[in-house]
Image (cartoon, rainbow, N blue to C red; front, side, top):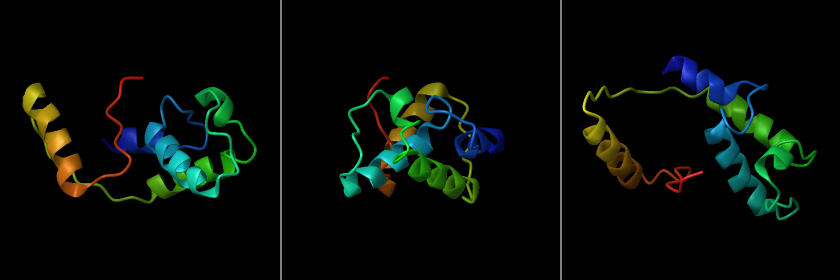
Length: 98
């Protein structure tokens, strides 16, 4: 888990390995209304207006503390993730397929 969190926070990580940071950055950038968020993900992460926000979110993730709940059964794991996201009202979970 620690290594996966580091992947989300590395400056060199792109949108495919730092998805959490990417989603957080998009939410922040949307508020400014100065960045074209309709661009392809690979273009957006290189956008000079978006990149500083994206890098900021990666840094934020590196500072996060996490707690792990070990669940062996993959079906229970899936349901728990959805339940936790709904219960904790996590704004950066996206449930659509990429």
